[in-house]
Image 1 (cartoon, helix red, strand yellow):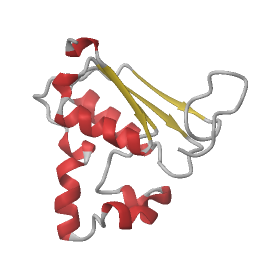
Image 2: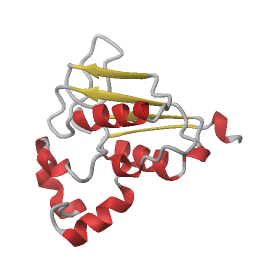
Image 3: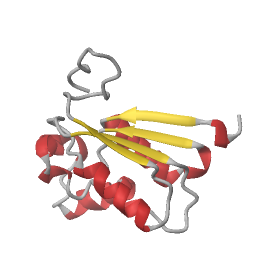
Image 4: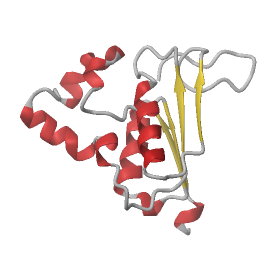
Length: 141
């Protein structure tokens, strides 16, 4: 399958994976959707539930841990000369784990470099996926 026809999607920790795929392997995809993504691994501990994930990811305030985190932190690996595909970031102002600032910062950085970040959305109804019916979206990730 040609890469320009392949799209990927992930949310929360899967949103982190989408950010890593975007910055490491952009040529493999025609489009990427990242829902409530964790993208700034330098500051993740400062926002919402981030500090509770130190045991999982490491502490960015520790030099050795930051050296590891820096290798895959999507925000810190955006390069102005990469062929990034179009990307859509979906965020929620009611997510109690991943702050919408992760997506907002990434959108601003990508746009600053002239990339196609065609849309960002912030919905206010719970966590997880944006609502598509009259039912509330599922809670949790």
